[in-house]
Image (tube, rainbow, N blue to C red; front, side, top):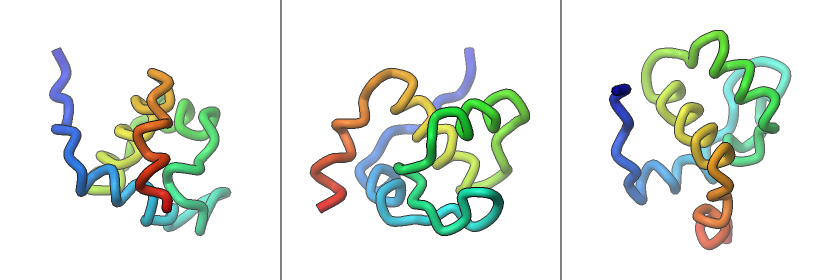
Length: 75
């Protein structure tokens, strides 16, 4: 069984505030990254550290159709 990060409000808030720091989608909010980009990271491996945790979290949220969790935080 894989270790899943605890889903806490601070983590969710970071998903709607933090922008991708590099690559094709640089400056895009993590919550707005397209699924195909997140799937690519899932196949190749998420970066180490906080960014990797956040990308893996938004991947799981989108994969499971839980985008509505972020809607109140975007305001």
